[in-house]
Length: 448
Image (tube, rainbow, N blue to C red; front, side):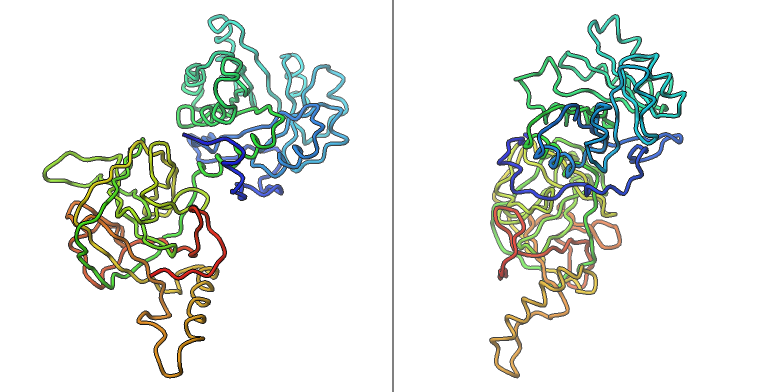
């Protein structure tokens, strides 16, 4: 379940874009190109904010700091509403076009006004209020198919199927399709943020959202939820195995997701906040059973699993509805939801690795230096400060001691955990230590 309450997002402070967007005003954000047309991935489609007649200064600041891309304003607001986002002006009369600056977009419910705006070289689009779906839907298809810059379609029914049909019919068109939220048929039933996230994931590609709210917490929640769901990257580095230890029975967790994973995907699992090993999905040959492409046999219950917004959570806390990162061996990552966490007693294997500090960020190198300085400061001259080498960061992972559990090699080839030997090179993620309830905190912490 996606938590939308204010207290669920209060501890998160990072958003996708700074308010000074690097994207040129007047362009659509892009994910990939298909036949020369911008195609957006789930969680990457645009969301706009309906700021018409907005007077709340606190909400204005919240919206400006969010990752929404466009603001819908009235002509009267252009003089007083300062924003770095793309301005979209709601126009009701022809003469209003005469006073508009050239860089705004025009939004209207009248086809005559849209044509007039387009003739004056404005990017322009229609608002279509669907009253009778059977009667009005052919018009929606026609408008979306003719290549308008954008169209906002308001369907009161609590369904996304009409939008799926539209996306299928206009796959090669550049028209940006948006849905207005709140959806009339879902008012007081489904949270507005959840409505938006569902729209943004429609047919994977997603439809855009025109979001209307006067609740700061809702804006913050949508922005942060999207931040976690947008395609991202996780830094992967080469880790050298230095020790493999058979540790006997323990409780291990299988993370069963609601998504199918590929042979190149897995999750980051580690015993400490310093990082973890890339543990593969169960998409590789199993001689005695069918594949479980939705699963990662992750590791021991005490382990961290990396999630969104830099969170590292305990495997023991995973449950249906939790969100974690699914990493690809190339460093790209996506968010997947957990459908089940299966905990059973199994023989366990400890894999200890080291990562050269030359491979990691300056922030994490400094954390390693601070850790070493603290130890060195209380160690008598001539004595070693530790059995570990200061040129490396050390991470370890406890895995089920079985041949079918695989980890990703640094060369992009999977390795059976039971066949690992010192000197083998694996893919790993190194992070700065220090966690409180999964969130990164600045503190001195010793993890061994």
